[in-house]
Amino acid sequence: MKKINDIISSVNSALTVEDCQYPTINVPVEQLKNVAKKLFENGYDFLINLTGMDYKDSLGVIYHISSSVDKNAMVVLKTTTDNRENPVIPTVSDIWESANLYEREVYDFFGIRFINHPDMRRIFLRQDWNGYPFRKDYDSNPELNPVPLENQTIEAMEDVPTLTVNKDGDLVANSKPLFGKQEYVINIGPQHPATHGVLHLRVSLDGEIINKVDPNFGYIHRGIEKMCETKTYPQILQLTERLDYLSGTMNRHAFCLCVEKAMGLEVPARAQAVRVIFDELTRIASHLLGWGCTCMDMGSITAFIYGMRDREKIMDIFEETGGGRLMVGYNVIGGVANDVSPKFVDQVKEFIPYMRKMIKEYHTLFTYNPIARGRMENIGFLTKEQAVALGTTGPVGRASGWSCDVRKIEPYAGYDKLDFEEVIRTEGGTLDRYLIRLDEIEQSLRIIEQLINNLPEGDFKAKTPAIIKLPAGEYYQRVENARGDFGVYINSTGEKNPYRVKFRSPCMTLISALDPLCKNEKIADLIMIGASLDYVIPCADR
Picture 1 (cartoon, one colour):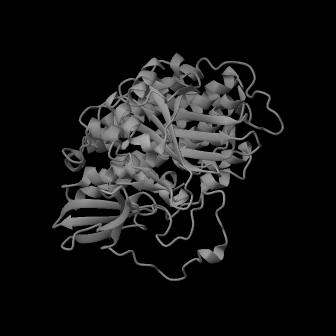
Picture 2: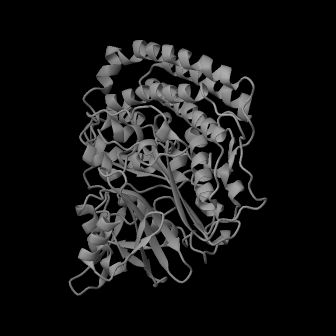
Picture 3: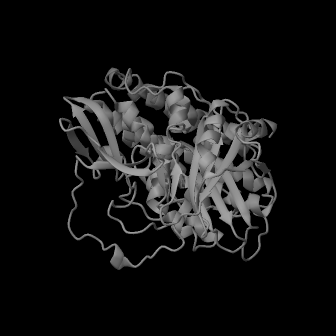
């Protein structure tokens, strides 16, 4: 706290730091850039999340910022503008690169334009969309935005809008071409199996060498965060599993933790242990599917079948206890929906040695295959500095040498009492990202083994009110899902439904890494590089 006060005082002694969940600073718009730069210079190099807000009388942005070195360092910046007709805020994308997509998202949904942002296009909605849907006064009349009945063409040579300030201090709207006139642009997706979801990539080529990758989001955007504003907290749980559906249990866990933190609710030890077992089984299942799809992208159908075969054993465990398979629906506010099945312990204990045996088989089948290694070695390098700047957490960040495991940084659900290693690799190449997920399966097995052999007795759920209302305030919770740092921000006014919910998508930052990773690589390598990122499109689109 003292360090933050010293940093802020060096910019403006009038600014104060509130002692909230994390140190929080309300910054006037005109001082935002200076404060952001000073924080970055003092080690706050990781922009975790950026949230747009409509306070009805003003519009604003909330920045959750941390350090890639000092794991316990976290600070929250807030800024607002009273101008609802033409709201503008300085960009921080030149300080934290991950803000590039985050600020486009805020513009898309709230209409806030960011001065000196290099690309002020909408990111999820059509460029001709009328209105800003996350504003409280948004007119949702469908006649304002009729559904097109014919295919629409995205022009390859479209202009990218920007907003700058001239020497007289006036705002000037400009535009620049996205691609050069001589660039050859090809389309990959949105309906393409190797984009791992409904993602559209426009790729600029010089011969077979990639110049630029421009991802187009929003093909399956469902407005989940907006829907949360009209749902009760138990109802929102169903939506969390439909973000990154391969990390559904962990996403649901994160929302439960955030609500429980706000309520001051203590979850029974048995429920915590069972939650962690389910989380780690989910992580293994996700990595198995990721491994199988990566192999299939290079033509190994057998490996994909093996991965799905072994993942099925986890689905059987989920179904026996939770009733669901892909979306288990097991975590509830206060604990878990029901106690574990009588078969649960035996099923999990049988799976552990089986999975360890299969990992060796995976390496024999694919990892040591000379063709596979030839496609993965010496391509798609991401440095640690790039990973931090882009906010690419999870296995991708750790493959580049960045220690970013939330289970270690901000332990939850008893992870601090468990013996496991954070797997780190340093090369940051496609092969490292491939290998790290297989290594993480072993660490998940270690965690599960410790818990299943010492499963606490007692209740599986704490008592909760019939109608859950959170105290007025702001709450944030991070968990480590299969793709990285998944965050939940809740703004409550004390009612049974939240005022605002924001989900921190690890997958959106992973997709943003495609451009720097693929630049100067061959088009033939794009598919493998994308597979090594293991992104899930519904997580990005939300």
